[in-house]
Each structure stands twice: as C-alpha cells, then as structure tokens.
Length: 475
Image (cartoon, rainbow, N blue to C red):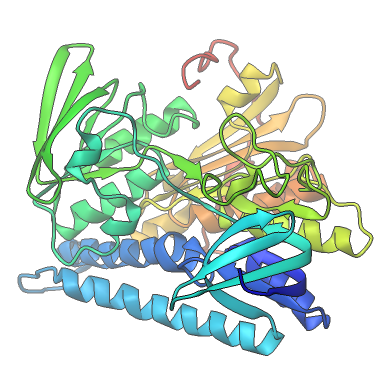
C-alpha cells in the first residue's frame, strides 16, 4: 500500500451534493479531494436529467414538424437521424463536463478519477482510472455515492441485456419496437420521446395505473395522451420471463387479468426503480451502517453512524432528484458553519417531463385521504388558460388542495404546458404560508400560463367528496 495522502475533506462521488461540498470547502482554503469513478459531476449532467431532457426536446421538435399543417406551415417528408440526435446530446454533455472541470480548477479542489473503497475508517484506497492506486484519508468524509438502475429478478432478464436509461441515451439507431418495463416517470418520458422519434412503443407496468404515486385522474390523463400518440400501455401486467436479446428480438412474458401474454419487440428498456451504490464501497470498514434496502443510515442532519462522516443524495435515501441533492449539500454546508438545518418537512416539488408535463408540490388527493387530512378542491381545465389556446396546447388541468380550516395551500398538481414552471409559483406561496387568495388576487401577466392560477382560484374551492379516489387506489 502506498503512503497515505491526507486531506481536510474527502468526498466519495462527484454528484450534485459532493461537487458543491468540494467546491465550497476548497474555496474556503481547506485541502479537499473528490474521488469519482466515472461521471464528472455525477449522473445528472452525464446520463440522467439533462441528457434525457435534451433528447425529449428533440422529440418535441419532431412532433411539431409532424403538426406543421396545424400551424399553417408546409413541409416535405422528414426523417430522424439518431446519430444526429445523439451528437447533439453528447455536445451538451461535453460542454457540461468542461464547465465542471473549470469549477474544480477554480475552487482548488482536487478531482481524483478512480474507484474508491474504504480500507480503514476515513481512509480510501483508489484504483486510479489511468492505472495504479492511491490511498487517501480525510478529517471529514462525505459520501455521495448515487444510485443505479435496478434490474428486476425475472428469469432471462439479465441474459437479454436490456437497455437502461444510460444505454437508451446512447442509441444511434431507432428501435423498431421498444418495450418499456415500468410506468414511472423515467419510463413515460422515454416512451413518448421514442414514439415521437419514430419507434413503436409498448409500456408495461404491474400496477393498475401509470405513475402510481399520482392521483387517478393524472394516470387516466396520461393513458389518454399515450393512446392519442399511438403508444400501447399494458397495465396489471406482471413480468414472468424474458426471451431473446434486446437489440435483436426480445419477448416479455407477462401475467394479466385476462391470462398470460407475450409482448414481442426489438428492444427492451427497464425503468423499474433504482438501487444505491453502496455495496462495493467498504462502508462496513468505515463504520457506516446501512438500512434494510442498502441506503446509508443518516439522521435528519445527514450524519451517518460514523463520526465526521456525512451521506447525501440518492445513497442517503433522499428523494431521488437533483434539486433534493443540492438541498442536501446546503443542509450539510450550513450545519458545518454552525447552523441547524434538517431534512424534516421539506417541500419537494417534482416534474415528469412528458409533453405536456406533470408537476406537483405538496399533497395530492390520495395522500391527503390516506393521512385523513380534510381539504377543499379547486380544479380547472388547461383550456381555460388562454395562453394554451395561443400555443394549441390545451390538454390537461390544474388542481389545488386548500385546507378546510384556513385558506392555506396544502398541495398543487398541474398537467399541462409548462407545468414544471408553474409549480414553482405555487411552491413559493406554500413556503411563505400565504393563502390561495394571494394568487387569486395577484395581477399576473396576460397571456401566460401562470395566469391560470387566477382562473383556478376564481371560484371558492369546494369540499372534496369523501368518496373520491379511495385511499387504496394508488397505493
């Protein structure tokens, strides 16, 4: 073993939380190093959030070309060049990596490319990407290990070599018939994008509706959207076995209420959840304990069971969004400076980047009913928002949950154009504890999507019917 190099701060993983911790502490004059196995900056700029939204936007452009007559534009036949789609995505990723390298150089944090594993408390041996090893230690350790796509334990699945989101974003060809296993946000985003680029697409999910954590009306609205775009959806379909090989010919055997069925296609994409990257890091040697699902056990300050060791982001069991990982960084940063921030009661928004988008912040109806929280409901179709008519994007609806004992907003869901931007407006009101009437009475620019909030709240929110959306429907 080589001589151990010592740092004030040692970060394992350069994802959203880790890189900001590194840059912040290094700029403060502390000797700081980051060990990164592969993706500079983590999954988001390389293989997840930003690349997928890049491809989704390309698919949106393709869909607009196909709607050219609707806008009074005459075009000729179009074709999709997947090598060009991939090239645009890669150019963006390369640019983001350059930005990250610049931030490391500017901050003074050292970036060590290699795979790290604890060999003693606060001590990591790194198998360097360019050969050799280094042993590094730190007074303080920050774990930002991330997560990876999970493959379900289905006979023949591993042998079929299915795509995950990583491989799907690197396709230089258009799958003839893409089968997507999983009806969550990753599966739905890829389903619509690949269909718009020209693939036949079938989505398979074991549950009774798409996006099981959302209300029934959202699941039904997405189902109608996919039907209109020619995407087949098989619900209540439990995978039994896989035959063949993805990229050639593959068959997914499922059990449905109507009996067994085999869905045949050219490619299989698995989007059924994620696993934490904690299994090969030697965390037991470091004194860091895991929970029953393999996530690092942390308290509300993101401290682990080992002294002076923190965990952030996906590996700590935080909601698996980049914006949450950034907030994890802020919690750790502020507490290192004497603060007392915690993960308790965080108001976490999220968005599904289908077209139109689904955005939510706070409770939906199913969650409120399961928790026994009474609420009043305001709901309006997106067609009532005049901006959508200028865009020819009138699909969807807005709905808000308002407390019964006050005018406080407790939840908001948007399915429609620019939903991801709209939820930020409502989130701000919720963070301040403002009543819904603040949004109702505000002078909002016309014609914008945000103006829809005045439409949504124009009428008094009504008590929700007690029989609406039984608690067990979307569990």
